[in-house]
Amino acid sequence: MLLLTNSLSPAITSSLYLGCWQVSKARRVGASQAAWRGLGERRKLLEVSCSSSCGDGELGEQQENQIEWSVEGQVDKILGDQALMQDLNAAVERVANARRELEALEEQERQASITHNIDTANSLVAACQRDIFAAEMDLKNAEVALVRARAGMVSILGEEIFDKDLERLESAKAAGVCGMVGVLAGLPFFSLARDLNAMEMVASAAFILVSCAVFGLTYRYAVRRDLSNTQLRAGCIAAFSLVRCLAQVDAVRLFAGLPQQDVAQQLLQGCLFTGESIAIFAFAAVGLEYCFQQEIVSPFPLKQP
Image (cartoon, rainbow, N blue to C red; front, side, top):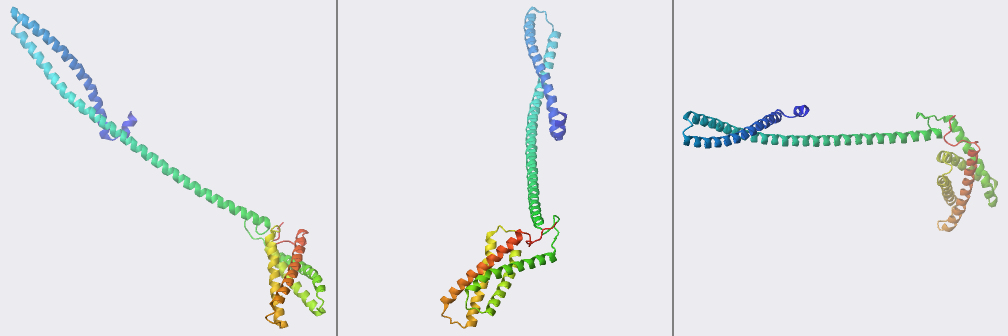
């Protein structure tokens, strides 16, 4: 009760105390009303006895005055009690109003507390979501760093650990392997071309050597350690074959002075040359991958100890 009155406003607290006091006073008024009813009964008995006594000539004037004074005092007391009853009713009404105000205030406080709790919960949820998003980003970055570290590109701390001299050496080895394998793969095609002399065969072999060497450099940096990616490997072979074929066909047309109308012959020659290029670069890629597996040549990037 003390905690409740301390949390209320002074007006509500005073109204509650006044109501309690007036309730106790109302009890006293009820007791006085009961006494008044008993007095009325005694008055009737006195009147009856007075009438009977007056008839006999035994009751004096002094007794009658005492009875009247007693009755008038009781009447005044009853009238005062009626005013007190009115005050009591007003006090009860004020207590009821104060109670309603108290309930409304408690409801407002409860609603405010619920709203505050909801806002706090929303803030916590938003903070948790931000933390989760940040943790996911950190996890992804850590996974990328770990993959790159395992591949030999960077260390766990994110520092680059390339050894450029060793990378150049491995690239030169890859170019040499692809050049030699490409020249060996092109020898059967030289034997099929009977109209070529020795100088033309040497020139063609030199072109194949240079093309396959460049192919080896590009293949090592493009495929890296993803040797299971068939599409990437086939794409590299097809790209180099197509470029070599188009360049060779165009050179033949320009230097041999072929007529522009002989398109069918050029297309046929281009198709044959494309097949030859695909075979040469495919053998070069297979030879380089074999060297990767045998650790003769290291894929890019080099694994660090």
